[in-house]
Amino acid sequence: MVGPTREEAMSRSDYRYLAAAFVALLAISGGLVALQSDASLVLVALSVVGGTAVGLVLVAYLRWTFRS
Image 1 (tube, helix red, strand yellow):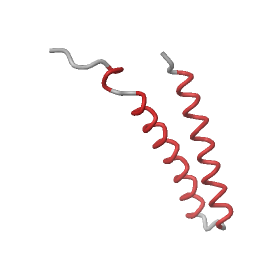
Image 2 (cartoon, one colour):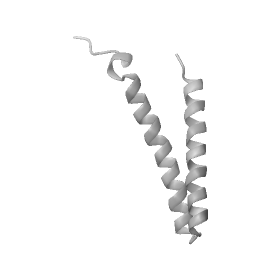
Image 3 (cartoon, rainbow, N blue to C red):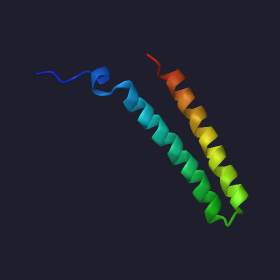
């Protein structure tokens, strides 16, 4: 018996959840690094925004690279 193909196993919404989790991971990571270095709340917020921007750029690049 053959299992489902990759396209059948992972729907488009699964990829969106994975991309959103990746962006959230980078955003939270940026904020936590800023908190660890005793930054002000403004810098922590800017780090979260910067992490979100980097995450979105990386997701866009990966989608462009691995498009089928």
